Length: 127
Image (tube, rainbow, N blue to C red; front, side):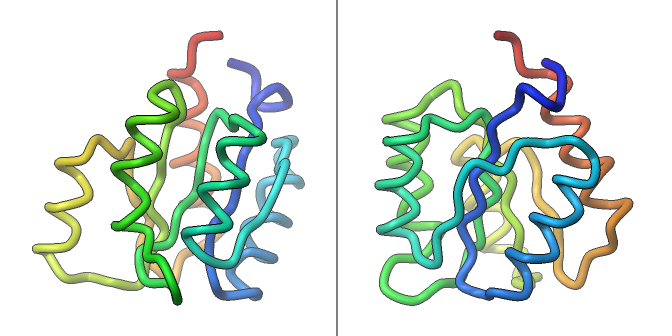
């Protein structure tokens, strides 16, 4: 899939993280179609927008990324998910990998890591 055609949804409670991701992705020609600050509103937005890729934080208020991840996988099986987290706990990472994520990015991150990881996932989307 061409990056300009890839619809990306950002779900992260940190305003700065979302802004940095949005700026990096848009500068590379990606289409950031929405943003949410917690898992509940993120899931609602995902069902409405049906993005190609969701960049999902693990630790968020109300409903965490690990709580909505199985629902995203069930309700939107064609949507790719990249976890974006500062959580380096191996048990948590192993848990989300088992649910079928397509990769993860550890915070703090740099622009090139985001660009490379997103390009790798978007390049495998067939539409």
